[in-house]
Length: 350
Image 1 (cartoon, helix red, strand yellow):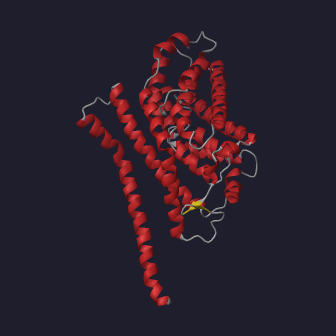
Image 2 (cartoon, helix red, strand yellow):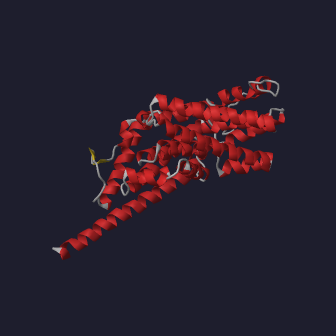
Image 3 (cartoon, rainbow, N blue to C red):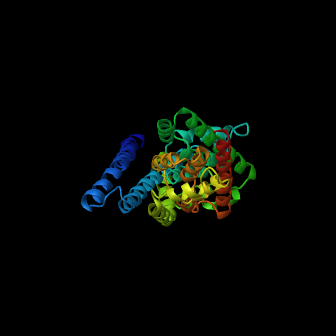
């Protein structure tokens, strides 16, 4: 019996790992080809100017939809397979930290090395929460990833020098860590949609992952990807569609008039205007540079940049699939308050 089953087991292993290798190569090829393909199709074939509002918006919609879908597929699959080796309790012990705040610092540090925009960070957020990472710790990652990363640091350094850059990085990390700790203290897991915490295999909720085979774990990953994509795709299209509509737009004249150095409410106005917008650091920094040349205070501009890259309506739409509105409101409120405080502090010391 052993000699009969050994070749079969080898063939099964070759199919499993060969199929996984092919799927990984295909995923990577699609990810690399995503931007060049839409550049060619929209700019070359259709003939839209990619620097115009219409062309950049159309390109943004298709490019970001595919990018975030690919990130969802890759991250959710990987995290699901990894979590099949760990119980929720072990994950919480690892990333929750033995001392309060340790996990938040680790998560914020992870966010620094993952250059996601606010919407691109959502797939990783979903995977972390589903894996049992404490909610407050995961929130620190969600805030830090778009807010502080190597792209933002490099661009800020080139435009404004080391002083404002260090202040921005320090303030961003403090906001991410403190906001995550506050949310963790509030114990708001009840406002996470229940399905996030369920572990399923072949359509059935399982209570333990002990004894699962590699085929079981890979199947779990595939099923989790399908389940989340099926549930989130309307939110994805609406969120990215809204982001495309407002992509690259910033009311520079409005800022110059109403958020100037003489207005005591300038920072608050900057944050309120920045939250509905949707951009990453590379997209918003040229606008910040132009506004700085018009004489707007650095604290007001950094608050505007923080609000734009860390909080956005498209991000909230995506998060709604996994978080209840009350938790989204708490997340936005705490983060926005931190950004406002930082803006006023920077204006006072710069």
